[in-house]
Image (cartoon, rainbow, N blue to C red; front, side, top):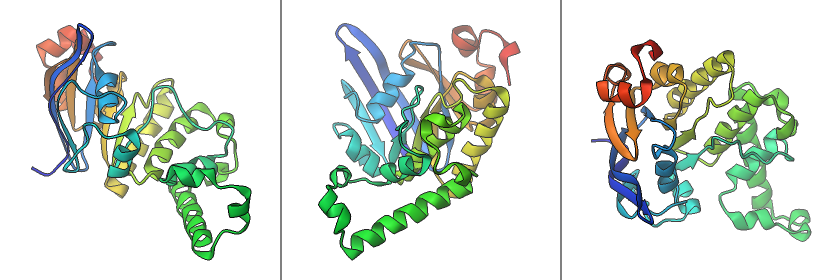
Length: 261
């Protein structure tokens, strides 16, 4: 099977609490996959294990056929996984363009350029910086944000801050995006626009997407498959229609068929 992400028997324990237990998930290349469940179900804990913030107690994670258990977050990013957060984490005092340029710099040492190197940068470095700027501006153009490239991130409307965080994750060279509640705080029109953005990212850039979300209209409207966590255990997975009609999911999370998209 052609997999972007393969999680096998993933578990993590904090003291006497098993936060995630024997979690399995297989995400195909270019798939849009949703991970849902009640608050405290373990969804963000799974993301933290995928990005090296937490190390699992047991189990295996392979991203693009590479074992990422035990790897640092920076290494995992270099393998092609990039993440956004429920609470936006932009560089608020940098411009939109500068946020993307920082994300494109995969070598942290380059962020420590002193004045001497900035002034006397060799030709190859100048050309590299010019290419990064061109790539960043092209990304902004594709997503209709060129007019805001010189705007400080903190001055963007909330919906555009969400979009910029996703673009910043893409700018790392991501092959797979982990989106943590990307619709949080958005109004219905912004959520509709976000759905279009996510589809465009997958279709135009061939990027795989795994997202955590509480907005069922977004999940059921965009995700090709959905997995459901409850108290750290996966209780169901399948298509949106299968999930909507699963009695265990309705009881644990959806509450009633009235919540269907």
